[in-house]
Length: 236
Image 1 (cartoon, rainbow, N blue to C red):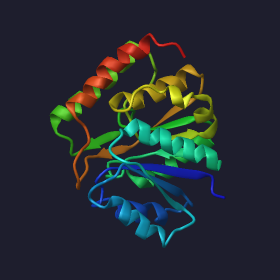
Image 2: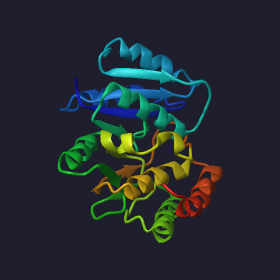
Image 3: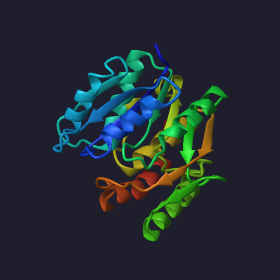
């Protein structure tokens, strides 16, 4: 059985999902994929199920009723992957803001000793393409804010392109993860750091989506800002 699975949360990603699956399955490594779809009204799940006929042994789908939040989608996927015994469990967006070619680089970082490998925009060699200036500044200063509050020692604190070793997710109490939106990515890194695991940042180029609609909102961003302060005083 292959040791690596990529969790793709989806909500209205019909323009991207088939191209993403084609790209992942063309890579020179036998990745498996789990799509966690939150009841996409645009038919994303139907596209996945049709495509699964071609790849029944390495493409899987979990369907949930309603838009329940990014964090809960990943937690659902983590538990599913752990139950199946995968050693390397990846997070990535379905909109091509994360380059699938970088999946192998993240796995290599874990093969070389990292417990969590992060695709980072803000380490040397990392870049962002096609973002408007206001969003770029919001993301950059949000990461600075998180580092100042949590002393987490990670440059890209809000990154969502990651590879976990199984032992990290087995150690973290997934049922106690509090946040579901912007703060989810911060909380998972903080919990990993507090548990004493080795974290490596791998430089990537992040590209704004071409198709579909961004899920970012003011409410999600506010959760992140307030959540960081709450995390600072939580006991793990």
